[in-house]
Length: 362
Image (cartoon, rainbow, N blue to C red; front, side, top):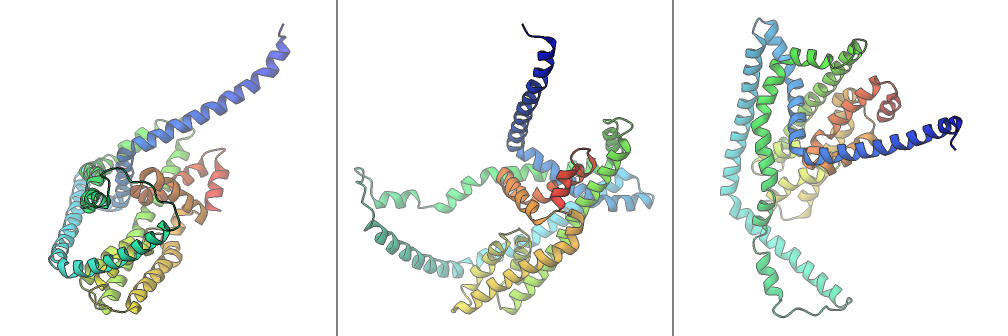
């Protein structure tokens, strides 16, 4: 027979195990939701970033006497016009580059043939060490080549899903940004009503601080991208490369990618340099300068323009990029830092979660 005392002593242990199991299950559900709702969530987060970035302009127009809805519409239309203009300018540059592609393709083909011969010699050397496997009837080297005859088409077909998600985001982002800007006060008021009256002041301060962090992150990265694009364009012009403005802009933006920025930013100038240079020195110079630009941006510009707003340590940034990049791919690398910075602000204002916020900024 179970006495009341035994019942009281056993109940807390059972409840604690139940709470731990429930938390694990809840974390798994959240992770699955984040994975399968990636296109929706990334669109929403990107819209929030743009809304916070454009909100000061809307408030300025509102202070000038313009209705907030009309000011939001004008700002969103201006944003769309600027993006469309930039894409049109890039498209014309890309068209001229495609017209000149034959002279680059010849050099790339010869370089790829050299690499292929090296790989074939390496494979032959390995085949002499490892035992040969019997080939199936009718399976030969020719069939393998026929299957891989059009690798570009294969990559394009694999990327159709990403292109579709990008088109969906490009369609919905302007509307979401407009609604967020036009109905900002109503949304904030409705959000505060979700919390008890004793916590609304703290919630308001948290939202304001999150907005300041996101706005500073977007503005800082935009300024750094402009600096790197100008520096890369000037450097490529000095090196005598074709299309210095186009590849300078591409390399400047790619150089913002943490850790992989150097490799990604070096690819466009190295491809164009194949028709210009016949020695290793210019190629090595390009890679070295891209490394210096990346180190300067990561250790000087980013801490000065973004780091004070974000307040995340290097380990937290690395883990955030690994997690969100694994979860959402390229969009995760783009949005991982602002999401983690926002979570850090929330932890700083939630009782019991302050140690997590201190760890993220230590």
